[in-house]
Structures are given as C-alpha cells and as structure tokens.
Amino acid sequence: MASAKKGTTGQILKASVIMGGTSAVSMLTGLIRSKVMALLLGPEGVGLLGLLQSILNTASTVSGMGLASSGVRQIAEARANGDAACLALTRKALLWAAVILGLFGAVLLVMLRKPVAVMTLGDESYTWMIAWVAAGVWATNIYNAQIATLNGMRRLVDIARTYILSALGGTLVTVLAVWQLRESGVVIAVLSIPLTLLVVSWWLTRRIPAIDVHISWQTISQPLYGLFSLGFAFMAINLLRAAAQIAVRVILTRTISISAAGYYQAAYSISALYLGFVLEAMGKDYYPRLTAVAQDREKTNVMVNNQAEVALLMSGPVILFMLTLTHQVVGILYSGAFEETVGILRWQLPGDLFKVASWTMGFILVAQGRSQLFLLTEISWNLIYLGLIWVGLPVWNLKAIGIAYLLTHVFYFILLWAIVFRVNSFFWSKTNLALLIALLACAAVISWARIFPGIMPLVLGLLLTAAMSGYSFARIYRSLGGLPWKRNRKA
Image 1: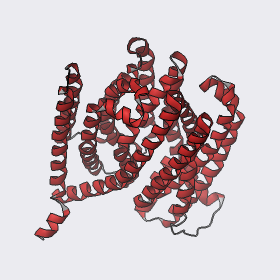
Image 2 (image 1 turned 90 degrees about the vertical axis):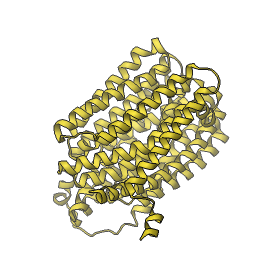
Image 3 (image 1 turned 30 degrees about the horizontal axis):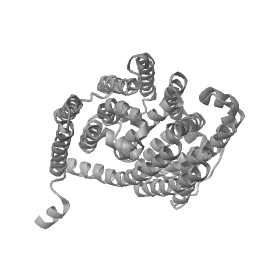
C-alpha cells in the first residue's frame, strides 16, 4: 500500500512539475503582458481586454459544444482499453467537428457583432473589434480539440511545449501590438494566444502516429454521438462559467465603470496564474488517470485523496504567501493604479483553498460521466456567486466580489462532498481534513493580523508561510520515501 501511494504521489508530482514549469513560463509571460497593459493602457485597457476575452470564451464555449472535454474522456477510455480503431475514429471525429463548429461560431459572431458590442461594451464603435475576435473563436475550437487529443493520450510534455511556445509567441505579439497601437492593439493581444496555440498544437498533434481507418457516416457516427451527448453537458457547464465571468464584468462596467472591470480582471488573472500549476496538472494528468479507474469506487476514492493531498500541499503555501504579500504582488504585476484589486484578492485567496479541494472531488462526476449532477453543481455555484455580487456591491463595493467568491466556494465544497459521498461513498482522509483546516487557520490569522500596525502582519505571515512550506515538503518527502538521489545511494 505504501509503495502504491509512493508511486501515485510520484506520478502526481511528475505531472505537477511538468505543468508547473509550464505555468511558471505562463506566469512570467503573463506578468509581462499584464505589466505592459497596465502601464500603457491603465485599468480601462485591462478592463477592455477582459471583456473581449470573455466574449471570445463565451462564443468558443457555445460553438465548441464541450467536445474538447468529452474528447479527453473518450480518447483516454479508448487508450486504456487498447482499442486502436476507436481511438483513431474519435480523433478524426473530434477534429472535423471542431473545424466545422468553430467556423459556424465565428460566422455567427461576425453577424451579431453590433448587438454584442452594444450589450457588453455599450458602444457601437467597438464593433470592428468583435468581428476580429471571431477569428479567435475559430482558432480556439480547433486548438482545444488538438490539446484534448494530446491530453487523452497523456502526452504531457507535448502539452507543455504547446503552452510554453504559445505563451512566448503570444506575449511578443501582445507587447508589440499594444506598444505601437495602444487601445487598438488590445484586439491583437486577445487573438495572439489562440492563434499561436493553434499553430503549435497542430504541429505537435501531426507528429502522433496516425492509424488508417475507413471513414464513413456509419463508422464515425458512434464516436460523434458519444462526443456530443457528453459534450453538450460540458458545453453548458463551460457556458455557465464564461457567462458568469462576462456578467460580472458587465455589472461592474454598468454600475461602477470599466475601470472596476479592470480591477476584477486583475484579481481573476492573478488567481489563474498562481493556481495554474495545480489545476493544469489536474486537468491534464489526473482526469485521464481517474477516467481509467472511474468504475472502481475504492480506487477512485484513494486516487482523489492522494491528488487532494498533493494539490493542497503544493498550493497551500503559495496561497498563504500571496495572502501575506497581496499589496506588493498587485503592485509588481500591475501598478499602483490597481489598489482596489488588493481588497478583492484578500477575500478571494482563502476561497482558493476550497476551490482546490473541490476540484479534486468534482472530477469524480466528470470521470464517471455523471454530467447532469456536475451541471447541477455548476448552476448552483454560478447563480449564488452572481447573486451575492449583486446584493453585496452596494454594501461592500468591490470587496463584494472577493467575499462572494469565498462564500460560494465554501458552499460548493460542501455541496460536492455531499454528492460524491452519495454516488461514490467518498470520505475525506483525516490527514487531508486536518491539512485543509490548518491552512484555513493560517489564512485567518494572516488576515486578522492586518489590524496591527508596522511590520508585525508581514513577519507573522511569512513565518506561517515558511512553517507550512516546511511541513508540505516533509509530507511530500515521506510520501516519496525520501529524495531520489538518497534512495539510489542507499541502494
């Protein structure tokens, strides 16, 4: 049992290191993009970028029909069963469906560019930007299908190459565009990442050995049915997420200003950057592995607890560090003009602890194909989140966004736990519960310490972060049975 856990922990850490290195590059390039946007365009430019990205994400989600997520599951399942013909048919069906649906989504967005501009930005002068965003919709659908193929086949190194090369290329294009064109360059910044992801992912998927299979409507209809039946639920879930993001930005723009949307975009981007290494590893390694054992309750529950342990050990100290140095981090990543973002993040960061823990449980429903249950949890999360923001803005101003984020993730954690206990008899291990409680206690102490003047809050926060970092390292060290070079020396 110990050796099995050691192997599982090693696999999780290997995936986390690969995707963590990728996230580090993405974080660095994202920092450069954010800094350039903040210095050259200010909160208004960052807010415009966030709104255009939300439009891109929403249109891509609708036109993509969730095929990328369902494709990962079907490809991983076919690979685990050793069914080469099914694997080849699923790959072809996924790619061609993405090309056609992406083109449909792009054309539809061009046709609706004027009402979309008025509804989201309140100004017809942005119509031309919406039309160009349509190219990003087409590119996003295709690269999502290609990354789904790499993901289902667990080619983590190729996925890492895709993200790294696209991040570097996209950042170069973004910096040059905004530097030379100012606000007009924002639309190029939005398109830079999808287009570079399309080129790089196409190059890498072409290197996968192809299997010749007879293509006809009869042979391809079965994988298409599986992709669309499960994909529709994923599309609805992703659409809810994208719609909630754009709804928050529209509410802030209409009730306060586009600068408020910029503060929110900054908080959202920072959270995505520092959690990327954990959540990317879950999606790109954990999900396919969990799919392979999804019908075995005991193995599934053990894998979830193992993943949750490593995810909390790796993300917990980072969250505490960010909570201690929120003001400094926002100043470094953006500028002094983004002071309002600090208040949002200080409430949002503790919510990320619940987010990491919830994600590990949520994949049980996805891996088992329980799309309706998963859709129910996502509907609940988004409705409560938007409702709390709407009610809280007049009371807490922009802090309401962070407070709503924290409270909604607490609710989401409890709801998911109740559901997965019912469908899979899932229990959290005592060590994982103790770890989550300890991290929450540290976060509460760091937040409470801000009432004191001077450097006491900073010192206390850094001490707690160092203590949890040391504890996390010791736990991972024991799970691996020591460091690799020391084990080899003993041998």
